Length: 112
Image 1: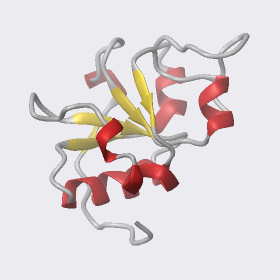
Image 2: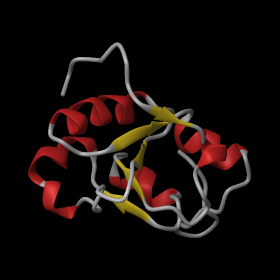
Image 3: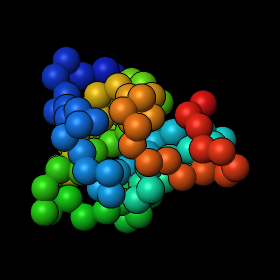
């Protein structure tokens, strides 16, 4: 998962519904601080061993998110090669928060 692809399928925060299922590949402390309401948490390092925990992508692409988009881009490149229909969320959770989309988390949700 270390190679950065040249072309990664991407979507914008504006194109993702507030209640969309997204795959969040950030670390546990980032997740606890604030995440999308219907996110599935699978840290990047655990991705290869947790493919069964991922949402079904048969109905269309599922956004993958991290803080800014770098880790999720690597995840999308790898998952695409595994046959998953996924897209990188451009700008990550920083962009999600900046557009005013809902956050869930411990205390006052925020993005680390």
